[in-house]
Image 1: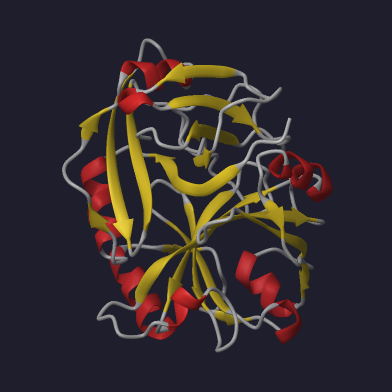
Image 2: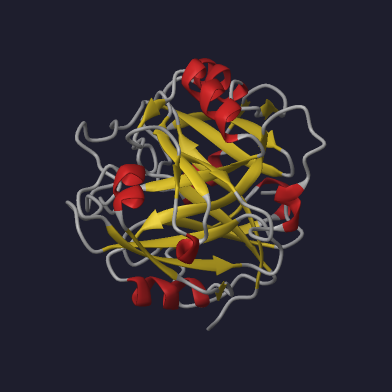
Length: 299
């Protein structure tokens, strides 16, 4: 049964140090929406961590939100040799109005570059965007994106803001089979957009992957941004998600998608969350965690 998606509500990163995380992301223009709060037991049960404790820090950039969840006891960190092509890869793409200034501020905040040689401008046939990928202190990958005129969402061409950081355009996941993953997200009510096949020296530098070739498929909810992007790498390590991945592992990023009514055959765990939201935890074909929750409830 196909769900009727409303929006991509937020992305949850697992974090080891909320104070350090807050400081880093404030350097990227994010603002904390209050102090950390205790994660309700029903949500921990939803994530399969009934005996854990956790705190959540929610931060906003423009109209988009991301949350950072610190678990006690903590889970495992990213593998030291993680690459852009490993199937646990998932980033958020931050849109900027001034790439040079945003790049400078990200490095000053402590960003660890993935991209070689600074920001890269991709060929026009793959969108013509300028991009730069890096990691936060926990190893979560992020991307800075600058859209040239006539590309991207209308919101990204508002330049009357003091900060060069505008908002979150999408979260992207590395997938083993783009067609299989497309079918999964279509089952949640997202619609596939025009894809691209990215390759060339700029793409190699962007991902730090030799002979990089990647099929990119955007999956869009009715409300946007943000949306989900599928990254079907054809080269690189492409190691699968560890079979024993838990939500407290730092690489276990979760995307929250609001739907009209919760139903479907892919529900693996369900819970009633605070505020009246009914939610279920799903796994995409490569093991990325997706939380779907009903419209009208507090997520």
